[in-house]
Image (cartoon, rainbow, N blue to C red; front, side, top):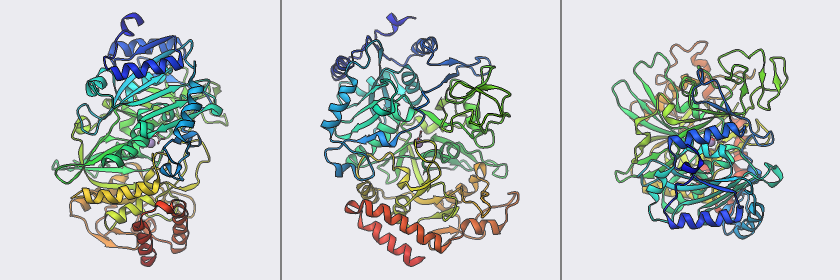
Length: 591
Ligand code: OXD
Ligand code: MN
């Protein structure tokens, strides 16, 4: 196979042709490569990426189909300061987003893209977000001058001819343009034009900024379209819990970036949960729409996992460890001399010597980390041994519970259930979490991150809350809403809850509540597990006292917490639904 036979496949759709031609005229690439998603194309592009030095082939006996990529050191995470929502008015984008008028942003970015692909190849990457034939599925086309992006999009989306199949003669597809430029943070923009269903991303090659189907289309543009069309685009994993009797309950959960969504989506129940299984539908994004049966149905629009690597091991995520043994692209982990990879928190001890994520020699004595804290794997979902058979079902799965959760060392208990939908919206809206390495900036500071969507909501956050409240009328059998916090610490700074597989105990209580077979007590924050409904048997060094500490409410902490909620509410006050203010009053009076 060579480029002659591969690069000649043309998309027949006139709207596609016209748009690609216009962008090619602007960016002036030397070549246009029309991706078709075939296996031969993957082989060809991979070979080419290796020749160009973009990918390093890992040991193909130990890690078949695995490759290694090192990013520019200034380009390792999402950059929220460079991310814009270019709605017609600033108010439509709201005070939690950066905004520039569409015309001004188009002018600025077209100037940057002018001739930007000279001497380079433009890859035309057609893709689907969602299974073929689902009413929720959206078509996107990304034009990129990054071969790494073309290969990663093939993992993360249903990429290739299948997208043209869904599109047919239509002109409704997301128009995404990505130019790496010189990977300069000064000229880095991730700009969304929701009214035009368009995205332009320049100056970066980091997944979250440039795999345009993911955060840009599936969340920012998706949330905007969801409000217009009556559905929800959320930063949520989706999993299915199967009981020993074969009853399946599907749950969606929103945690901020790098707070354990991938681990929770792939949780392996501990031995005492004999016969219980957990299936993964998705680990990052859920699109949810009311179905004709009155339930809320969800799909995972992605077809792969772009997970944070550090801390992944056979205790935290055994399924992930299995799935990344083949056909995976690793970015910014450490490269061992034997052609395998390592990271902090790996099962294996640190290698005596390796190359760190910057390509420098690293030994256990080195002060720097070997893998970047936001190093990533990109793996197709079919690699996951516990992939739910429903993950490819165009209907999606019916959601019985929605869980919100953050990384909080104090204040927030292990688990509680909201009293009803509107209270649940308030619980999600007031969520806070410590910042992580997934975005550039300080790590470990608590910030409000409503529904884990602060960096991903494509319109005014107050209107987003209103949309959530309004959805209640469209869902006859709404999911129950819960809050969890795996990260509470004691006075010595030690985690009170063992986490990982043991989170199954919390999940089981949640499922049992949805199925009407677990007791709960009424508490100021919501319903909490009744004394005999939460199984702690077999947990080492864990007593009912520890559980009481995990569930305790400190009134001084909650006074501060509510003041911090108020700061967000004041910021978006002009669009804040009054229900949020009523819920605040109710909470204060219960406390
Ligand atoms: C992600 C993120 O990569 O949330 O999923 O940053
Ligand atoms: Mn995410």
